[in-house]
Length: 75
Image 1: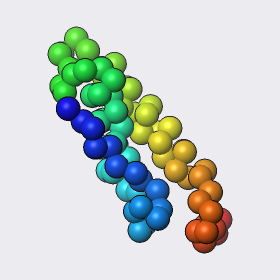
Image 2: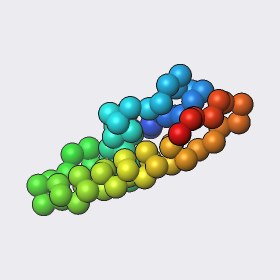
Image 3: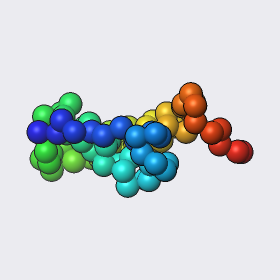
Image 4: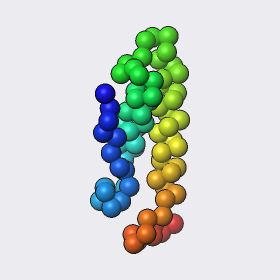
């Protein structure tokens, strides 16, 4: 199944992760946890909602991480 959720923070990625990369990781996570590659129609809504919530949490996590030795973001 999905064993290869990749690290999305520098220095592993040279730049910030894109929304697409974050969403792909969230989808892989939901697939792994649920055991479904694609949910049945009656589970589609909860599956997609979980992907949205996890993608949002992932973006928040990445935005808040401070990586030692990396330049701080201005802002």
